[in-house]
Length: 183
Image 1 (cartoon, rainbow, N blue to C red):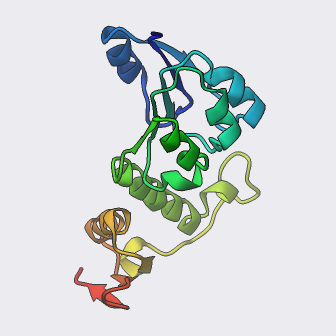
Image 2 (image 1 turned 60 degrees about the horizontal axis):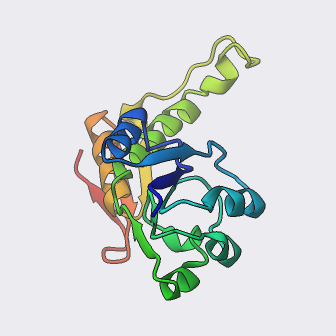
């Protein structure tokens, strides 16, 4: 039986994780192309016992059928069904499907926080590539921030904005419809 793992995740699987897999006796092959085509995935999955995906590629039924030794597909995120679209066939073939719910929630919230700051401060227009040299903007303590959903990511995002001094953090969730966090 082979001991090879295919890794397409380049955002959350770092060199230290690859080393852990290698220390456990696996040979790791990276396909550092997050939007790999079905044809590329069919070729790459051959001879692999594991597949760690975190790109935007779709693991279709054709990819699953191409897998000759595959035992597990792991998605490094929550909404795996949108990426492992061949999951029913995989299950029928005895291939385990797993994901890492909420493992990257902090990273996603931090990215959303940083992106919001960049947009609020108009950083792209003010940088070297931009067309502005000066602009007055609002500070966080003047902003009312709205968050749709207060799950793992939304809760962390609300904490970040509150800690940074946002004037008000308002959220909408299925259970409470709309509320405001004390700042």
